[in-house]
Length: 82
Image (cartoon, rainbow, N blue to C red):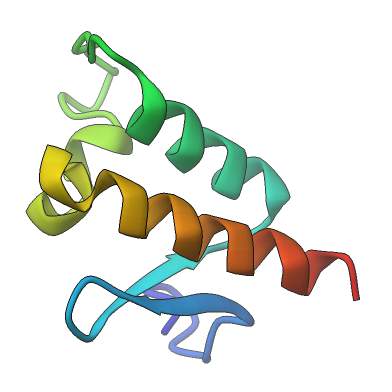
């Protein structure tokens, strides 16, 4: 659900034991994918103190879930092509 408007999000996929991987748009999918595949994840401080990526849920950032998260991202991308 969109945290601001409280409306259901169109880009979402089940992942990692019933969690929902969601994104606002293709750029957001790209950002998440780049973070998940990065071998080194550097922290960048944003003006608000935390970046969007720092706020990702732990299950998404866990190395053991990388393959499953990437498969879910693939499903999100496939839904964009429709």
